[in-house]
Length: 133
Image (cartoon, rainbow, N blue to C red; front, side, top):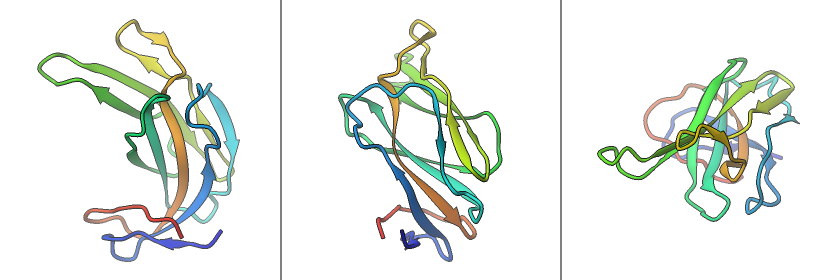
């Protein structure tokens, strides 16, 4: 797939590497083989839950272990629920841990569902919006 332009971020380019074929099902922790050899960063788009389409974007440096991606449901004043996954990125793969929720500190694979993964090159600055090439 061709490199696409990230609107609103000068000199930054994105290449779509992976799309989840079924975002409405649980996503167990797993390793995905992707080529990040030319990437500076990895952008991961997730949905809060299998029943929602509320995309959140996370950009993490390549070759960084134990990054956390996650979402908050509810207001800060009410405590809300914080759900997340650990993510490890290398030149050849991305490993997602099992989703965890703070409500019961239990695994629940219906939360923090990866939707798309992009390789990002260039300098990150200002606002961004990922666009499909």
